Image (cartoon, rainbow, N blue to C red; front, side, top):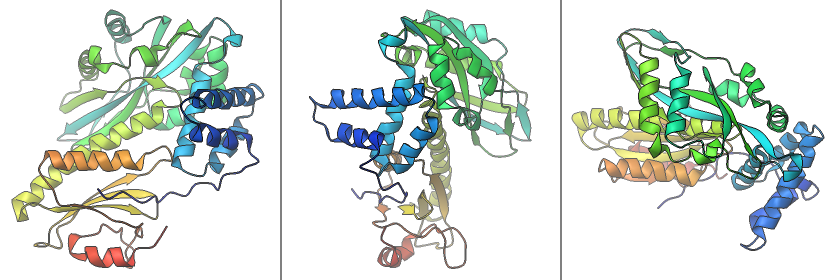
Length: 370
C-alpha cells in the first residue's frame, strides 16, 4: 500500500508555547499517562477561554507542527467547550449540529427552501428513538444552515453559551441557506440542522447519545426529503450523526466530499469502461494542499476524468486513501497507484495537473520533494 505524502504546511511548533507543549505531551503519553496529559491540556484551554483568549487558541493552532497535533489540539478545544469542569455548575446547555448531505438532480434550475416545515416532527423522532438520553429541554431550529455560517461561529461565543445555559442564542448567527440546484447534473449540497439540549455536566450530551444513526437515520432522511420536496427535483437526504459545534463542520465537509467522490467515481468509471475498458487510477498529493484522483487509459490519453479533494488541517490522509482504495476495490478496479512525492498543482501550461497513467514514470521522477 502506497501512502500519500503530506502536502500541507503546518507551523514549526514551539517549546515555549504552553498549549503546544501540552499537546505534544498528550500525543507522546502512554496509556497510563495519556488521560492526565489530556486533562491538563483541556484545563489550560478552559482557563484560556475563561480569560477571553480565543486569539491565543488560534495562535497555538497555527503553531501545530503536523496534522496529528493540530487534530489533537482542536479536538481538545471542542471537548473543553462541550464538557466543562464540574465547577461550572450542575447542568450545561450543549449546542450541536447534525450534518446532512443532499443529493439532488433536476432537469432545470431549481431552488429548495432551507427551512423545515415541521421541526416538531423531527424532534419527536429523536424522542421516540431514545436518542436524547439524559438531555432535557431539547430544541431544534427549523433552519438548515450552511458550512460557512457554522465555521464562522466564535468558539468563545459557544463556550459562553454552554455555561450560561443560553446555547439557543447562537441560532441567530445560523440563518437558513437555500439549496440552489443546477440543471442537468447530479450534485451534492451540505446543510446542518442545529439545536441544543440541557444535560448534567457529567452526563453525555445529544451528540453522544444520538451517535448510533441506525436508530433514527432512515426516518430522519425520509422526514427531510418529504419536508423539502420540490416539484421537478429528485432529492435524497443523507443525515450524519450529530457533533458538537466545533467538530460538526469538518464532519459534514468530509461527508459531502465523500458523497461527491462516490458520484464522480460511478459516473467516470462507467464512461471510461464503455469507451476504452477499465481505467488506471492515480492518487496524488499536490503542492496547493489538494488530493487528486485521476482516471485514464493508455488507449485514449486524452480521455481523463479527475476529482479534487481540497485538504483541511483536520483531514487524515490515511483515511482518505483508504476510502478511495475501498471504493475502487468494490467496483473491481485494481490498478491504483499512489504518487510517492508531492506533485505540482499545475502543468507548465497553467492548467491543473491531473496525471495520466502514460506519464506516470516521468511524473514520479520529476516530482518535488516536500
